[in-house]
Length: 431
Ligand SMILES: *Cc1c(COP(=O)(O)O)cnc(C)c1O
Image (tube, rainbow, N blue to C red; front, side, top):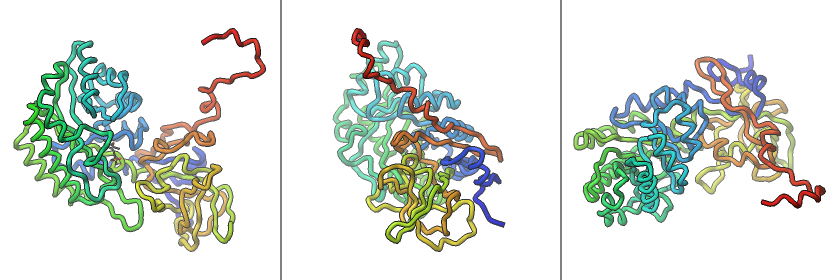
């Protein structure tokens, strides 16, 4: 018998038959195990907020929320997604460096737990909006700390950045609470960077962030009801990387949290996690259309590519490395050849894997990119060459749920307007 990749007993060939390819498949059990693997070990005072940026699918958000995740959002649509997924407003925070007036108004009108402000002018705008509504706006300050994270895939703090307010500046702004009477300055947030794969680095960051929050709230006289320690927990994608060990991580984190809780028993503690929760649960499934050779190299030309999975081209590194890939319909066959896996786009950049060790590939095969549940379609140029976004299927408790329909031509064309160059008498339309 030929061994096939399955998601909770559903063979990949059946998924491809039912939903066509290319396709993202999410395994609800993996989502649950990722969440609980950490939740069950982590100090109970530390709440896990799901960063929708990693995968904004409403059903993924709803499922994670059913396990206990709260939501961290960064746009009006992400906010709407979280609320429609059933996350109560008091379990939602909104951050991002360039929030619009409309987004900030929505934060106040929906009554979310905190707006994380990233500049003083933003605090001023929130203050104005709150005054107009006769409410007091819950605001946490995002701090760009003096210290930088070591060994992260992408550092977000400790250097000149559009994110947050510099630590130095904040310590000089001792009038902040007085200056913005309609803002309730209730929290501190720091996000150091992403793709961290060393437990000790996360423990050290968390320690420093909690300490900074404490010093800052003393200096500014804040009523510190929330500290968001960011997160940045990575998952391994490439050769030579290894996954975080949740036990080792929480053995390091929990005493630090306990220490803080003892001094600030009423303060809500928040950790924001995106890829850590979703990456492993997703597989991008592509159908092979053609195989060929060019100047001695093999090419498998698939129906999917970088327009759905830009991250697979090598995130946070200049060396392009391959995500874990396999021929899903023939898992038993050893990888005896090297294949370039490419897509339908008219650019050499549409190479989703370079010289990937695979068994001999044939048209009709299903090639899968594993660990693709984060930063897939959401972080890819899905409109390039007007292919549109693929279907997404969630398998949970042995059943398949189509959680996003594939874009059809009409979906892509309906927001365009046809200007008819031959219709000369349209000139009387003015505006
Ligand atoms: C991107 C981002 C996250 C999520 O990052 P992951 O690496 O997916 O966990 C969390 N918080 C902030 C502020 C972010 O910018």
